[in-house]
Length: 296
Figure 1 (cartoon, rainbow, N blue to C red):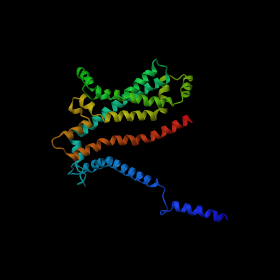
Figure 2: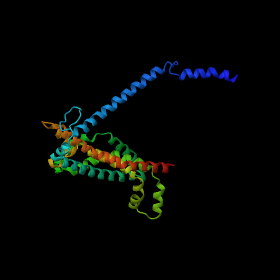
Figure 3: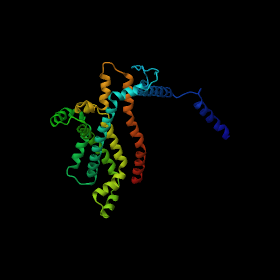
Figure 4: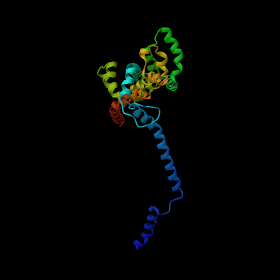
């Protein structure tokens, strides 16, 4: 009796799951929607992958052009790109990015700690003002800053790094503020009971615990300075202090564009960013585990 009752249900289930069984009215629409979304994702991915593929192939192509093609393998493009001032441009970009990162991350760390741990008059409006600054493109200040730098004779790489540090400071303050807020204040109170100074608390407690957040802020500051084009183009007058983005612009502005040299230099220029993200990945994982443990 029980077998007779269950047989119609089994037949119905088989019909629904069978490829030849009837489908619900909305199944066809869902299949089309999934197909369209997959095609869109493939096209979207190709829009990013094809330029990168051209970059890699053209960098080793002795007859490189704007077209995507099978390369005539050579390493001469890298030698030419570095020989024509490319090495100096990469070193200048490194100096610019390191100075800007050091200044912005140090200032943002101290400011974020003060905003979180100390009572500051008008702290709320000040934080809103900092948040407002993160939405303003700092490049709009380039003309008045240029006039000031011309007057002071500061059209060089280090003052330009200072300006880039200022442009990334608002976002880094907010990033580190949110991270320091998650740190247990009890550890600092225990250190004060042991007569630890503020500098000792910062160096031995806050800095090690906030290291992943500081690393994230440093990466943002480095990438912001490393990829900057307008600031070094306007605020650096000496051709010997040309940075990477300006050098790429010079490749494109030449009367006879050597696509192989351009691709090789662009590939070399992108390597430090990949190395930074790979090197900091373990630090980020450790920071996420630490924050979860503190909140638990």
